[in-house]
Image 1 (cartoon, rainbow, N blue to C red):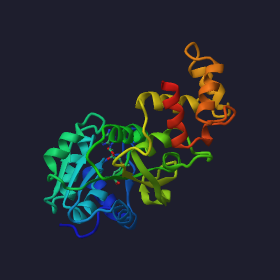
Image 2 (cartoon, helix red, strand yellow; image 1 turned 90 degrees about the vertical axis):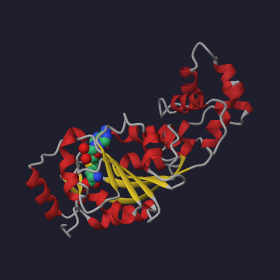
Image 3 (cartoon, rainbow, N blue to C red; image 1 turned 30 degrees about the vertical axis):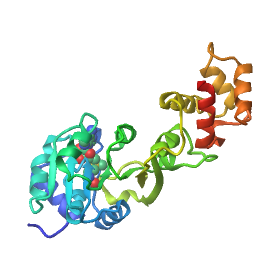
Image 4 (cartoon, helix red, strand yellow; image 1 turned 180 degrees about the vertical axis):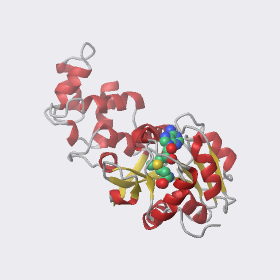
Length: 289
Ligand code: SAM
């Protein structure tokens, strides 16, 4: 066993050299080479010795190794087959890690949870995500309502800011509502580019999502609610009325829309970015009827 952590520049270079591994940009391969950042991620994720961890994209095992040291069991999904022999090598000292060679977007994660973790065991998702599919991965995990406690992920800073944004900020939009409908979201850390090999072009943050037992608002129809939210942010500089009129064209005229907005006490001249989740829910429920 090599005592030096995978996530050090020298060991990472040594492993890449040994296997002649070349990074695939198309798979978002930016590996972490800073053990302190990994320890912070594990702490933010609340990983403890009884916890189960799901990792997406273990790469050469930088984060996986630290998870294996702190969690009861780790299950990691890796799409790139070339990494499997490397992971077998770098994680050979740990018998609590299971690597699945699969695209996370195709995986039946719920079934994997049932098969791989103990009943009632808290399961937390922890990952340094491939940036090209951050939002599809997170929306899949959230919308499939998996039996997990939290998601802690390194993602592009700008996307993390949007997911955790409050009303009346530049970053607030339909993605903030979508994520915060399922979770309590907070940006836990911002991370310099220098902790990656190769360095990405964008800044990164660690986003922590704590799953909610219940959504914070009650909506009549979730698809309709999210459609209204999206329509409201359609053209950010336009008023609520203009965006809604455009969306409901042929189904509801401006007079009807004005009446319904009045009934829920929302001024039609406001902009979408000023509406809280509660206001969006009240509006969508009133428009649904
Ligand atoms: N966890 C490693 C680390 O922190 O050093 C690697 C992180 S790297 C940003 C993203 C990883 O996700 C790569 O190993 C890449 O091959 C993998 N990956 C990309 N697309 C994936 C997908 N659809 N499903 C599973 N893994 C994927």
